[in-house]
Length: 152
Picture 1 (tube, rainbow, N blue to C red):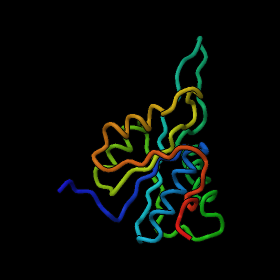
Picture 2 (picture 1 turned 90 degrees about the vertical axis):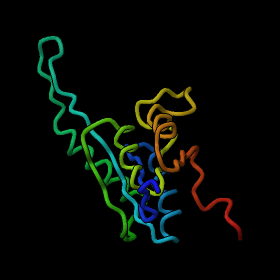
Picture 3 (picture 1 turned 120 degrees about the horizontal axis):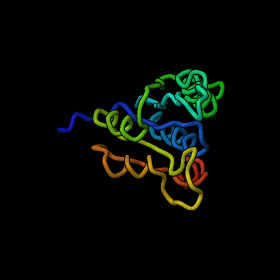
Picture 4 (picture 1 turned 120 degrees about the vertical axis):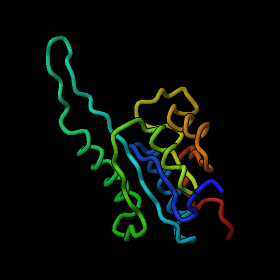
């Protein structure tokens, strides 16, 4: 047994529309099964010297906390987000999601996050997660809501 927890879906959130779609799909899959969702975002401190000027872009952790909080509110609105936890950690998004996936039922990521090149079909984070995760990975493409295509 690989230690995966069938009661938890990990979702990579960076505030992009693609990551909001991933969170929508997680909600769609998790609610009927009573599965918990962990929305994860990461941050890296872009602080240092640039041409002799000290650069400090504020608090990247606070910004990351805002991003994941805004994403949960965007997907759940006024509805209760019971069963959803948010995690904000420093580090690489791909490495963090892969590690979190070691104890999850699955990982859901959007196909394109912030900072990607429009011509690419799959972003670097989603590609790395899909290649290296030890649990199933759902890479969400497009903007079709999760309820389209369900039986009537």
